[in-house]
Length: 339
Ligand code: ATP
Image 1 (cartoon, protein in one colour):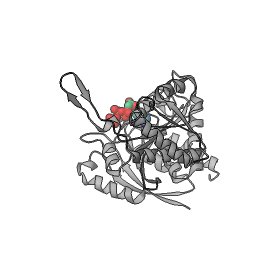
Image 2 (cartoon, helix red, strand yellow):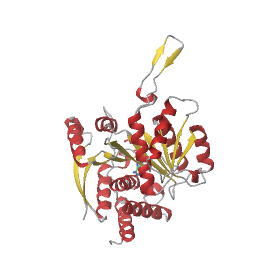
Image 3 (cartoon, rainbow, N blue to C red):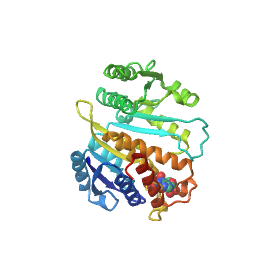
Image 4 (cartoon, rainbow, N blue to C red):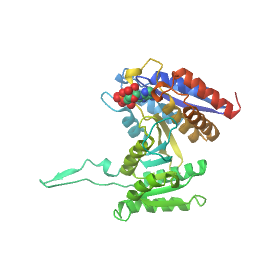
């Protein structure tokens, strides 16, 4: 049986319940995870050397599953992104059965975002009383990493790639990004690259969401697009993301996965936590491990259960965390034929 080392960054609030659910899901897989837990709770982070231990453990294992953590002084996500040089974020956003939304069409998008630079790296400055400027920084390294990640994902999942920016206006910065997308496209002859101006993409995504699968964007565009897409599917909280750092040959070096929602202190310890987002984070980790069948089985099982109304209370169902997890485990095992 194949084995993987995964660091567990254990968090606050509903974190422990999610960690338990996540372990149960991975126990159902035809591969083994050797978990390496690290206490990332507020209490655990009082000793700041926990960050050094986490960094060295993840450097060693290559994979980390991060549970929600309360932000007191510093944001653990931000610290880890910086310390591990996680320069690309993969944020899938899909229509979730059973979640009410104003948007009537279905969307299934993988947003691949350069997570550094753009205008977000420069706080800007005031010039006199009537002007202010900020520097927009586009670097080839993270753009190449993101593009390779997007094309590799397209190869694994048999999807198309669309790059998007305002290259006709921001010719130097966005133009530079698009030229790198073209260069990487040439290294993947089987995957066609579509290109859209970012403003047009927003409109077209709403009118013809079927035309888009993997969307490759710079930092700010990725930020806006992620929230807009979450609005379309009616939930900011049911998604997950993967954060990656890379080797010089553009292969992923380290990956950290987490759920989009927070620690939900109001329901902590009550068995009410919905583990869907953390399961979808697990799905992303499986894709990264190359366990694509397991990833597909996880996603298909979850979506089928939600569609049938088999879900936790927050989505209108009657199951607690454990009961829903058991349903997912049963479904995944049946799909993978290892039940
Ligand atoms: P934080 O400060 O960690 O961001 P928060 O409560 O402000 O925590 P969320 O954790 O995102 O923000 O929660 C917002 C609301 O959604 C809360 O009422 C919470 O109970 C609910 N919620 C969030 N995640 C889940 C989940 N996995 N299952 C069920 N309800 C959830």
